[in-house]
Length: 210
Ligand code: SAM
Image (cartoon, rainbow, N blue to C red):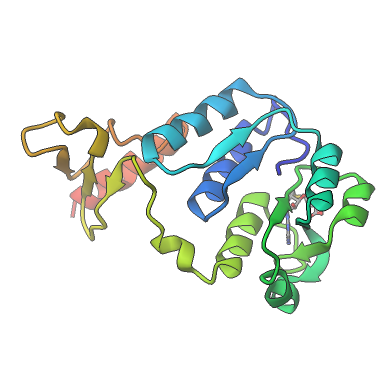
């Protein structure tokens, strides 16, 4: 659950919260508020890259937390003020249904009360994206990195260049939806913003130059 999204300044970071949630094993993102840009980017990434991740916008944080707890689930609120992650993760892992809450600026005090665990990924301020990634990785003990996402583009891990399989678009080329390129692959867009893509392309160019 992404709390406190501010459309005028949080578009990218909220999109990244969603991309990390999906890539690191979450089933759903609840967005408190609406933002067409975020919704489009995340729905597009889920459609192109496969799997069953879904986005529910306009969630009421209190209603969702209360409903979640009433149906037997437990709530982890990520905050730098909480119990340090290594001290509580083994206990949290015993829970079968976990709702993870990340904030933006100031999180309502009631969230601290309603949470079953207030968890810090180290007691220093950093970022909701980093906190979520590290938390999920520790929760799933790194296994999420081997997970397959059904029905979308697939990357063939490669030490150089980019290799992508297009299962849904097997007519893409004569080799049955397989494309190998060394740089600049628009069709396998990762759903990030243009300036992220620019950074990736710059990195590719520097890779090609040596
Ligand atoms: N004062 C905030 C706090 O309670 O962590 C920091 C605000 S930070 C810009 C936005 C969000 O990042 C927080 O609401 C929290 O979910 C997450 N966050 C930042 N640092 C964290 C840390 N060390 N451990 C866990 N979560 C953190």
